[in-house]
Amino acid sequence: MRSLAAFEQLTLDGFFSGENGDFSWTHSRERQDQEWTSFAAENASGGGILLFGRVTFEIMAGYWPTPRAAQDNAIVAEHMNRMPKIVFSRTLDSVAWSNTRIVKSDPAAEVRRLKKEPGPNMAILGSGTIVSLLAREGLIDEYQLAVLPVVIGKGRTLFEGVHDRLPMKLTRTRSFKNGNVVSWYAPAAARAA
Image 1 (cartoon, rainbow, N blue to C red):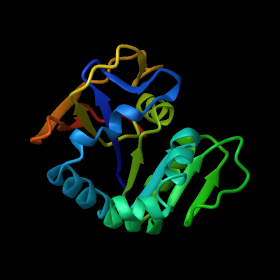
Image 2: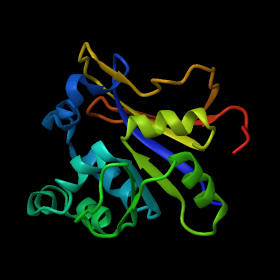
Image 3: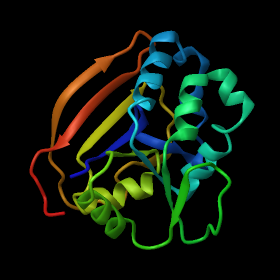
Image 4: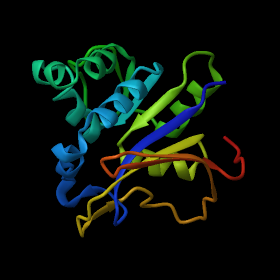
């Protein structure tokens, strides 16, 4: 059975997105050191299927297939472009990013279906609305939360719309010289999928 992980970058004050969808705080040059870049390349090389909501997909599709991405981080760009991708969107009819399939139906139903099939594991990158929806349904097996040392004051929290308690168990952590800290969590109690 496939598993689903969510990799998310958060601010110290708990936001995954700034006001009006601002993600500029995730790209600060002082946090893009060799150790963090190597971690990102290693994480991207894991294979599997990438899942996105429309907004995050459009941001990623506007960057990773470009010459700039290949110049900034050729290894990650190659993996991002090669990996199969699913974008959940009711409004997109076509996409240009290679290896992408649009799913217009219920994301939870599609993830339940995919989890029952054999094949590579899946990962959500960003896509807070999808993460919140799938978290409420108990469909995420691991949360990889990268806390970046920045406070932005206002924004959106990752678990907007989650009204029930979701106990988590810390499984490991890793700190980086640039101040980023990644913590891996698993749901503490199994929920029916």
